[in-house]
Length: 447
Image (tube, rainbow, N blue to C red; front, side, top):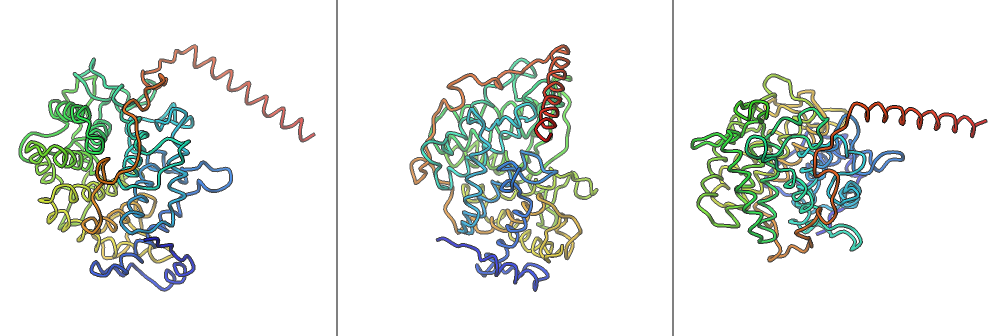
């Protein structure tokens, strides 16, 4: 059902509201509250303004978080049945695909990492699974884009160091190239699991198993009945030393991936892993209220980390839809967190800016894109049991893909690029010469 939000009503309502008036038993209450939070999230979007880049949010938010934010807006559209921002979602997801349709656009082609690319691929996968409006026939389709991201990531699998795994970075000159982190590998696992269920192709299951086993073998996933997911490890130590920070989005990537695989295969192994990962997810809840355990208590969460709860909320929602036995526990977490979010979203000049610490009985003074994303995903995912589970190619999914997506040509990003010192110096001279020519040409035109 189309629900176009009335902006005049929004502005009138916000000036007389001090906080969200959430009632989880009243759909109209949730509809009004999520519309306010979504409007606040889109305040950070400037890609539709003159001179700005379509799909990008305002500084200081990086390209990867923009991909994450569009995933949040897809959740908002689907769960709340509100298409207000659908044109913006469509244009953003298509504008940033890059010349090879693999989410390595020119403006990011020397800086993005595997995890950055993955979050745009996950957004495209979400669009396919939720039957978001398909792009024009002349444009790449949602499933194709998700497959292209998966394929280009899989081609970077590094068997020569630590017996496998993805590096954090794609390009050798970027800091972190020697680091193999859980978010990159977890995203590869996660995409493989979702593609397996959507397409029915066993090769994706094989890749998911390969990635999970490698992460478990090196210690990025803990042993025991609770499967904690740790930050990463370095090839400089042959991946024998683990950085043990726990981030909610890593846990969520692995949890939902396992849930997809159980839903598709029916394997007891994946059910057990789902439940073990779910047990470990409790570390991100205090009295059933979600928080970022590695940075929130110390007040050290950076702009990226302040969005992580958004991904955990949506991955919990997916898990609840796919594995029935998890629903009671997950819905308790989401519903309790949503009530806390409603108290938190009471700040700013509009009276409904959302904060970071949902334990406070009110706004804590934090604000930003990550805070709005996290609040909105928690709120809308309280509806997961009222909406259809992700579609696949046999039960309503209409997006068209290609198993060879992203590999038809040979993109330069598939292998590390090595830049010599001489090349850097030469590039600097060329850049300077071009810059001077632009300046002199501009002066000549003005005169």
